[in-house]
Length: 166
Image (cartoon, rainbow, N blue to C red; front, side, top):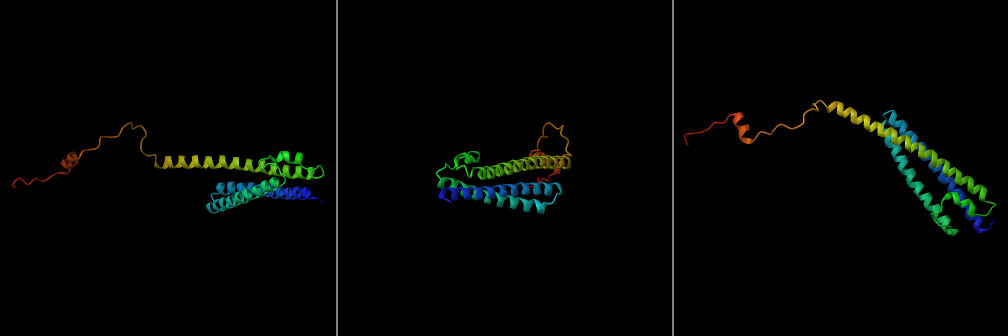
């Protein structure tokens, strides 16, 4: 196996790892949504930690892939959909399958993220409506504030003793 084939094999392994991490991210997002639905604060926090760690690891593995591409003389910003066209034909099918796995995992995780965004937005709206109902006992038809009493009016209402003998 020549050096190029070995490097492409490493890229394939990296892409498979990236696909697995993206799938893990989708699972963490689903767990987060489930925790929100069951009002399990501890599980929500745990899912946030897991999502953060997964995103950090995913960033590291993408940097690794970019470095591997750079070692082959391929631009770091090259889309994974173009990679199989840039490699020897004997490795193109394996590379294409790895790229498809990344795209499929990314599509699924994107769906999970969109669902979470909708669920969390509804939760926020429900919470705001609850607070408005809870604290909204003041009538909303008041259009202006009453004039604030000045100090002398307030003092006069309380009663003041004046010493006239001084």
